[in-house]
Length: 278
Image (cartoon, rainbow, N blue to C red; front, side, top):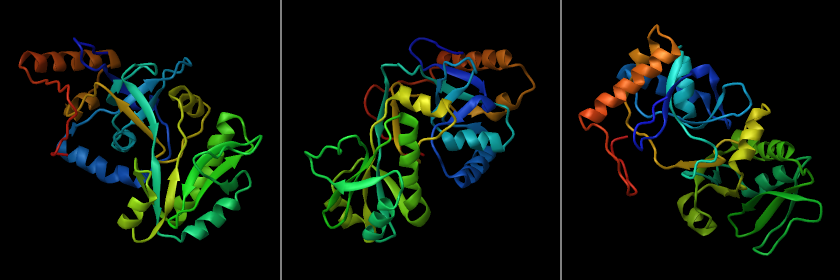
């Protein structure tokens, strides 16, 4: 692994050891794989955290499509940014789902028909009924608000129930991720708005527990932010494809980064940055 000065920790890892943490659209990996192949580089390394279960596996926090694209290209190794799960620069917040393309009332009916889910009115002071845990909050375009609750108390059954909720509109409607929580703002932006589902917050150790047990989080449910972040690495695919041991490939990565440091090809931006060349 490469840890020079205050740079992010970069490593060449077996791609088979990387595990996705949430459901994603595998079709998106095809054009990404084609773009990577055309460019001959991996532009931005995925971010991963290690499982501490002796398997040598890593959970992908960001870069699921890049990871699956490398797998589709039959490249055995990938360069990734490795972050400890307790890193002070790692934050996890939930996304909200903007749902559009089906009637909001139809969506409410589908929610209420789920066997592990109850639908009750919600306001800022609402608490789940006794013996229930809140899974999410749904805001209807007409201003009504509901909480989706379950009797399941354990983590993994709650995640399974949350996946069942998301599966309803994942199959019948469209979803966009957002940090917006004002339904009136969304009504003006989405002519066919079904509603807004506000997902719950999870801890990083909870996500690791879910994935280690062989389950996945709902698509677009987790937002990981890491500082510092390695971007525009542009690492050659030839180095990842090379007939060499993992130790040799990591030594090549270390030398490759040192060469860029020597010619001042690595820059650090302390301020929040918008990048316009993606």
